[in-house]
Length: 296
Image 1: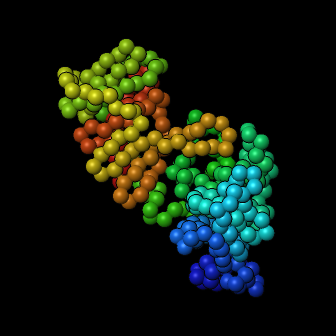
Image 2: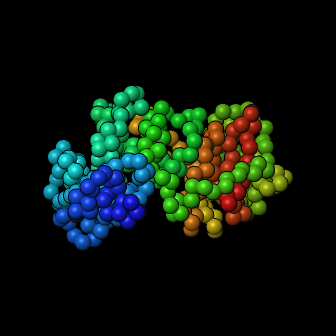
Image 3: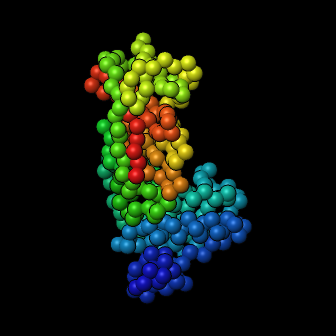
């Protein structure tokens, strides 16, 4: 069966399946809202791995509140969505369909909730992030809460994102200076035209970050610590929402080509930009390491 036939049948590979059976028909809402739903549906179905089946026959849009203050619902191969339309809600309801129609197990601690959600809802909450966000997580980090396990599990249902999400970029950290400091407190970075100022636990060091040589700065401004803006791309910390436990952070690269995950944060890490490069400063081995990021 060709790809076009697959798409027209909502990804369902069963004998006797026809477009009239499974191609979702959008009812209600404006033409723009209907198109937004169709686009989100197509994106999900294109990315769903071929061994999985899903058949949604109707998608109904309404401007009336849905039961239990929800933004969507799924039952009997029909999805209900409250306008305005959010793609992540479309993904969420399709994820319910994927789980039920493929009889995917939601038994075990991975699907436990700390707010009382049933396992099927935990699955959908994790699955709705799987098309983009979960791929940017990369591998598990030491400080991740166990609630990220559901994100890793559900992203296995989907193929890697298309070229708009540049998950395959090469990332390298180039250390340029190491400052002895056995403290444990936060680091603050101020950026000047001729260097930076590193402040931590009473320590104050002015240096050229590329060479490590001492300098005298006069116009330093404190960096926000969570982003580095350059002419080619931005690097920033992004929060992910595990199913349980506190939010977890990753470095993210964002350029014209898309997004790329840059791995785990180091202890007390701070981002800043200098000389049109993205830099980090963090604690490691009783010292503060300073360096810049090469992303290719």
